Image 1 (cartoon, protein in one colour):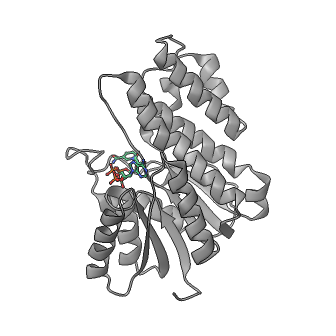
Image 2: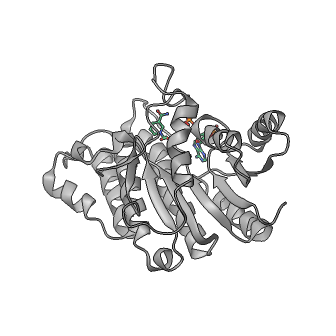
Length: 274
Ligand SMILES: NC(=O)c1ccc[n+]([C@@H]2O[C@H](COP(=O)([O-])OP(=O)(O)OC[C@H]3O[C@@H](n4cnc5c(N)ncnc54)[C@H](OP(=O)(O)O)[C@@H]3O)[C@@H](O)[C@H]2O)c1
């Protein structure tokens, strides 16, 4: 590996937008080393080989990652530490959506990845100092994570003014309990949407950590647009390339902290309301 290469890790990059981000960066001739992760090692290798057939000189590493499995996150953290020491950019792309009849089961599956897993991996990368100075953390949120879906105004304001990771996790638990116990607390009924709202607010919280400011790490959340992937469906208006270009814009932002952008949520290449 060329030691001068920047290193970028994209979670859930065996397919969909995650794969598109790596492919798009390679198309733009970015000289990164890429860490492609997948729940299945076999799929990670297949996706790596697919990229190599198009970009034979690409520097691609693969690693297994299941965000709902703490051990899998720890293994990835150890791998990154021992192989690279630090990375430049962490893109939290992996996400899930379920819509089966049992709402609580949907909550458990969606939140395990979109909220608990994403918070867990990000916290570990920060605690272990795995992100270089002037690096970046990019979190895939969604337009579905709009705050006005919370009909209870007091609750909505509390969520919008959240100050810590622990508060985010408490809101996630409180929302889960409201589904389990079928209590109407005014959350609205979008499990996926609330997961994406909480993770957007988490990006804001992380952007205010002392260590993030000290190390000048840029932190952003982003809506990729409605994209033709397994999750977005065939009726979505945007191609994977177009969806990935939203995240690539953030990768290409100047290094360091710009107050205009730090902790902000991006939609259609611009800062948007939470
Ligand atoms: N597509 C859209 O229109 C749209 C709109 C707004 C936001 N987003 C967000 O964009 C991101 C990418 O979405 P996409 O459309 O590319 O979805 P996708 O095609 O369904 O791909 C999802 C990726 O996440 C991975 N993943 C799922 N569960 C995981 C877990 N437990 N641990 C680790 N990885 C896991 C999948 O791996 P496997 O192959 O192993 O399942 C896959 O690589 C998600 O965060 C999504 O919420 C998408």
